[in-house]
Image 1 (cartoon, one colour):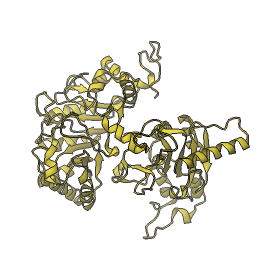
Image 2 (cartoon, rainbow, N blue to C red):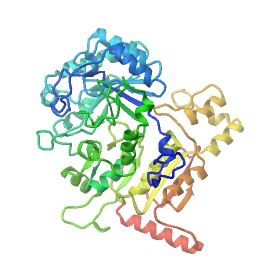
Image 3 (spheres, rainbow, N blue to C red):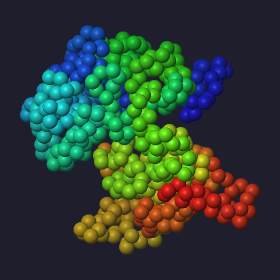
Length: 551
């Protein structure tokens, strides 16, 4: 939905809101099952003393009331907001009850974990468990995990993983490391620890509530949250906020607030113990709040309290200079600026000379494109390459990603996307191409899972599961992918063969020619009305410009 839709009292749905907006419903819910914790982390709203609400626990009967009201809407349920859920004795019953209708998620620091609780947690059918650990030595851990023991946290992680393996990997365990300046040197050791447990760590940018205190964001640009130079651009970015589209947050007393950043109940849109979901969601007050954010006029609460988007600080200046290759004291010209090239969804293959972006730990920028778009300034990038990845997103999300690629590319910048070709796959399926679909890998395993041609063909649409629950969602031919690029604003779009590109060294990017096609698009260039000679001259000019950018 475009947030540029003009509000009118004449809208067909009889409200002052666009029809697409009125058709949004919450699918993700967060329930504060406890307001209390066994640590006093100074950067946490609870541990830092920012919350003056009455502390307490939600009992199972209260939770059941909430669960029954949200069950017909909820697809994902977070059983925590501000507190340590493992301190609630009813948490396992709550998870088990909610698992009948939704995926469930809890976040724990592990301090209260015991062997019995670890086994109960896995057997509760919880879907996702976040372990907030962030360090590997007590000296660093106790600086901001005040009152905690890092060995106890690590042992808790090991216990839960033990039972998870014992019972067949029932849960997705996420060891989390919030990266700040004082702990960033322990990232590699944390990665090794997780790998030894057959787990994939998640490295995350921090929320710094007090810019004047002892903690600072990392000087690694991968872990700096989006910053904006003024309120206008900040509000513009907030238009993409997911919370106002489909998230429903319930505090301990049943109060409904717009997002997790409202720890103090600064807003209030109803009470789930007294009202139902639709009554609250469709109230004039809540709809007006949500639409104000989506239409680029986020209210004062968002400007003051949101920590997902905030106004520029000194770290952004560092990021921009290092990422864009601008030397101190020099102008940003082609002669002194190094080219910025992005290898998007790089996986485990890192390419020198490119910024490798992926959800995988160890990437230059760790980013889940399902949740966030590129943390880069407008018109700052020369090349974006993305191979065998756009098919892992829904077509709707792919459209958003490609639009964002257009945003970050400079005029004359190049996007090159390679993806599995629907035409090739269908032809090979119809011809029953045994050599292709039943190819064996060097270790003897089937290249494509499945017992039949149909099984293997369908893997390209719904399979090839990877870490973090990712899997294929949409298969393109050139025409369908070209349409998304046209919608994003690209006008010069070409289908390319394997290894054919104006990008030097493209052989380092391309792969799997037997199943893929390659699309190359150039921003703000058009061939409309041009002769073949004029098109050739334009491409030569672009290629020359690209080479001059020290690629």
